[in-house]
Image (cartoon, rainbow, N blue to C red; front, side):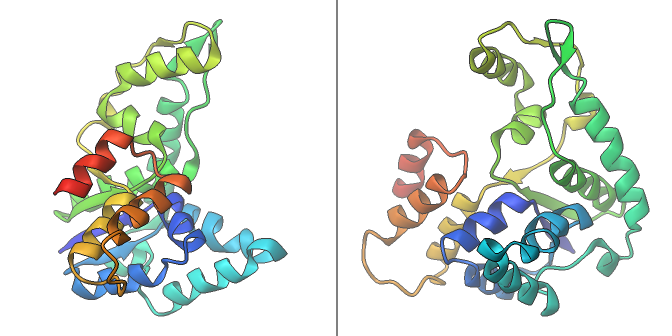
Length: 223
């Protein structure tokens, strides 16, 4: 068994680009689970369904949940209370990891941290997982926190200091919506024959929030 854990960002990104059907197509060829947490469900359905501007997108996402394309942790007998407890632990550590002017910098949301928590629970069950997240901060906390320190300092125009080792954030794997559409295209799941399709797909995800660089886009186009 293996799983992809979806943060809110990639699902919203694909929804805004009219690419939600790719999730169902990818699931049909993926030998594993597509999972979301209750915190992610709150962001992609429970809140936006009550906002007229976002209601249709929320209902389309709900359809994926109803059809069990996107499933909750309980589908693998994982207790959501344990996920919630680990989420709070990750939130506490992440949001106390950096300081500016003796104040902590708020870096992450509970939805992102719930994905890490679920990934850890899956690991404890011997289930391999990768986290689909478009936002840069969560990934950098796990992969290169020292780079995040530099970026935050530039963004705030003040010296931001890393004051936490962030050992709990090591060992996670990530994928962005940009890579998901790349895989879908390479598997022949995108019914558009134009040779510009791959570039258009990747650019669409970038402009809707995927933190992919132009250099990385050029690499994907050449693969």
